[in-house]
Length: 137
Image (cartoon, rainbow, N blue to C red; front, side, top):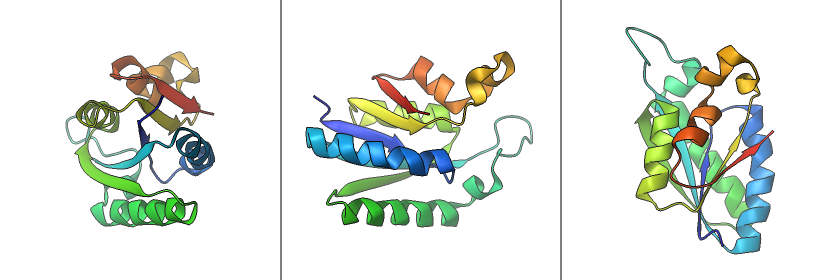
């Protein structure tokens, strides 16, 4: 059912917690797992990324290597992709490029307010995604 699963990650606790569900789903459906992380670029005129660590290509490379190792310990061979840009748009672009059947991502709960919903990466992904999105609270 889910041949290709895209798992966008960052350095949040929510991403780490979503990994357990990703592992179970990928094993159940014998899916191909693609792990994505985005080096954030400024969103507007001089606007800095919300998380300084996510603006470092070195930190992203280390994060992806750690994720790949953790999934390998579970018997899952994950492919990793690093991109640069605005996370929500990059996630949807990559999902389209790889013909993802499902995107699984953690949620920080920022979209629960009217103000936060326009800023939330997960809310933007839900609205722009070319495939189903599973948000892990």
